[in-house]
Length: 141
Image (tube, rainbow, N blue to C red; front, side, top):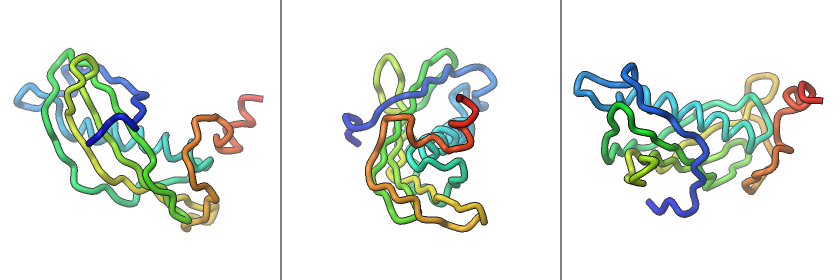
């Protein structure tokens, strides 16, 4: 994967409670972090707090992390559907830049107030905060 187009926003410190029996980062912890990061990314990109994970493609664990490592997670939108957002993810060691995990396709679906898929009207990435869900904007004002 070429990570030149991925922006790495979130960093995590690998702590003892994140380790498996082999002393390396537990895959379940990493996937929970990625799903949360992807949800936040989808919420900002779609401007809706009601976006849910629909699909994750093959997960490729490339290398591991150990206690004390600092890792960073990156996501980028690859496709905007009528009701969905598809993104690509990579996790890497913050200092060595060595890839830890890649996921080529994570799909989130935008939901309406009735809980069903709803058109979102977007077709490109934003780095502005203008797509924060309206109920979150009101809290700041």
